[in-house]
Image 1 (cartoon, rainbow, N blue to C red):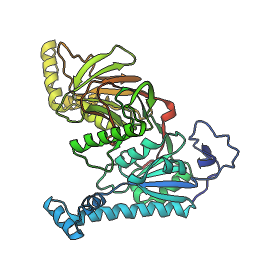
Image 2 (image 1 turned 60 degrees about the vertical axis):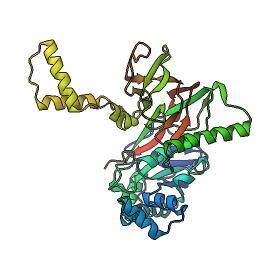
Image 3 (image 1 turned 45 degrees about the horizontal axis):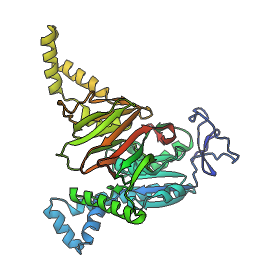
Image 4 (image 1 turned 90 degrees about the vertical axis):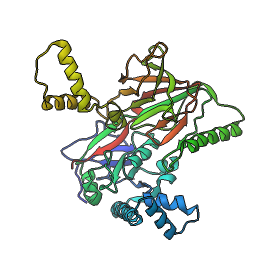
Amino acid sequence: MARCSVVNVFCLGSRAVCFGHPLRPLHTSVCTASLKPKSGFKPEKVAVVTKTTRYEFEQQRYRYAGLSEEDLKQLLAMKGSSYSGLLERHNIHTNNVEHIVKSLQREGIEVKVVKRGEYNDEVVRWADAIISAGGDGTMLLVASKVLSKDKPVVGVNTDPERSEGHLCLPVRYTRAFPEALNKLCCGEFRWLWRQRIRLHLEGTGINPTPVDLHEQQLSLEQHSQAHRITTMDSQQRTGVFHQSSKPSLLPVRSLNEIFIGESLSSRASYYEISVDDGPWEKQKSSGLSICTGTGSKAWSYNINKLAEQPVEELLKIGKSQAGLDFPLNKELIEKVTEEYNKSLVFSPDDSRLFYSVREPIVNRVFSSSRQRGFASRVCVRSRCWDACMVVDGGTSFEFNDGAIATISMSDEDQLRTVILDN
């Protein structure tokens, strides 16, 4: 691996991990650690967190039911799934993980490979840097437990043909991972500190113990039961029902979005909301989404984007009402639609939240002064029956009547990621 004559250094605990380039300083501040800087991307310990493939999921799911491999093949065929196809994708993922691990080991780096279900705070503490080996879902899970802004997280898409991987390195580095390491060594990259959401929870009937949805495909009843079990377990340990007058900071951070709403999607969600310490407003809707700049390209974008058909209809109404004379052609409709949808996306390092009220119900009792908008702080008081607050689609907290969530951002919670040019 090429060596670089000048490096930028940042501290990870008692170690110094370096990325640098003689012509491109990348870090705004240089660590003053007494340790001698190293001349490359040389964390001593890297955790590689791997996704659970569909093949592994189906194996685990049906192995407990006592099915043989042949039974599994037949069952998948009945469901319209290909056993051989799942096995092929599994092998592609596994081979790419091995490629990553061997590339790191050749640089003298100690590597620990952990499955998503094994990933915990102990793994985070052990590692100097973490590589997410999977897709965007794995990256979100990895990011949620990294609370230090000084611990870099790198995503590698291990099945680029089947996964978009917006949060991962460009797909060509899946096969050319040694080249990516070389670029990191020589500073041919940019830092990107992605802002994340922090959650404070207080009120009556709260349970700060989450249900992890990443490794499970739960029915509505199973999801509700999982929350009831965690609540009962917590009560048995403490002997009390949770009630907190002081906000408790939850030990997860959201890289994409927070969603609050009834577990049964056909049931209206009833809650009160305060934006930037403004007055409380009673709302009924299909739920509330609050996203970061990173998440503005994900679910939030799809909640709020417009298609060309409604844009055309609105332009026709506007043209008629204003008595304007302009050509309403396909080119104009496409341009207006594109400009509006582009306005929904903002930078991952932006310190603002973006909230979206899904399908608000407005009548003489319930109002929605703004359906969407930017904010620094959003407070939500639940009036729901069987609701949850879901972090990045994978970590679910019970959020029923009396629970209050305060959703905000802090520079302390930024996630350190890298940008490599394709």
